[in-house]
Length: 232
Image (cartoon, rainbow, N blue to C red; front, side, top):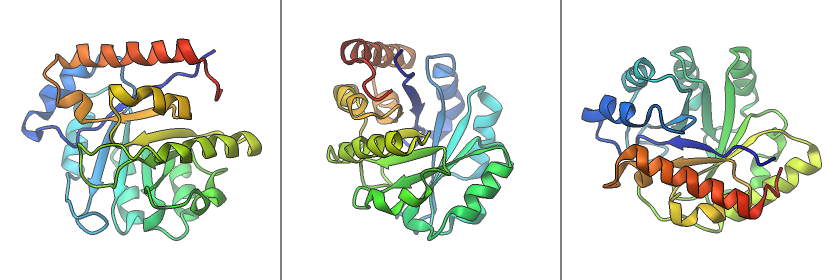
């Protein structure tokens, strides 16, 4: 049986003045998570929303939320976001020397923990923690800005992660974040990613949002039917 490919819309490119409206447009579509990019202006140059937006999203959704922390000191922020109802935190390995304490703290709160890795960072940096985490987020663009083109070499990291997970019998989501569009879905899925962060490819389209997601889901299903689930 093919593994379910999860879609996580990123609201980074959404007009926050119309956030509630945008949530309602796709809340009942075939999506699985909301992906929130939290940026502090230090780890990346940009600054994004904080807890007020998270609370607004929680108020208007039935779906789980993951917070992608692109921040210099993630320990405090991770715990504060978990306390207001985030289901999963994703922390960059580049921003934390040893995430063990934060992993344990997150799991003690019955929440999930993910590690993100930038395009120039080696998988070897996160290997010691793969047995302890719930997700790896592969950055396929340089973090911080929406609308970038995918760095296709990032897909090789996903293939390597699949090999490691099979060898060591690890269980974790592999999420790809950055430049994911309908045109490169085949490459993403074939590489082994089972979770897709999609922002501008959903929210910057002229098409009806629900129709856009239906089109994406149909494309995913067609790809899986053609290729099978080689990474299952």
